[in-house]
Image 1 (cartoon, rainbow, N blue to C red):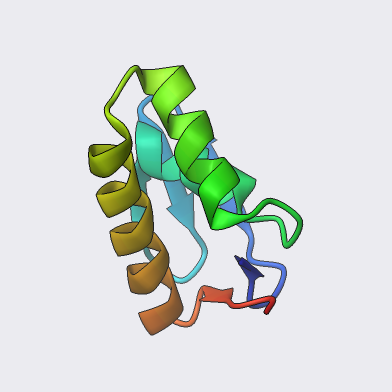
Image 2: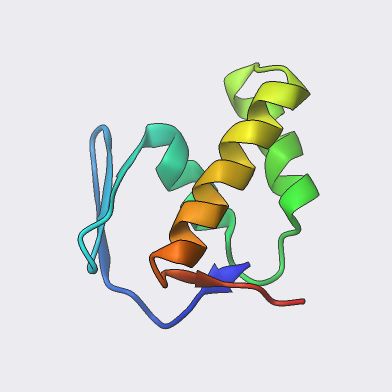
Length: 80
C-alpha cells in the first residue's frame, strides 16, 4: 500500500488530518506512515502489535479496516 498521490497531511498531538478531509487518530496515523509502498501489511500488523501491545487478531482487523477505508476514499492504492 502507498498513498495514491502525494497527499498533504498534518500531524497533530492526537492524530493527523489528510488533505482530502480524512482525520486519523494516533494509531491511524501510525498505520498511514507505514503505508509507504515498501512495508507489507503483515509488517504493519506486526509493528502495531509491538508498538501498542495488542493481540495480532485485533491489530490485523484494525489495519485491514483502515487500509480498506483509505482505498475506498482514494487515499491509498495497492502496490501489488
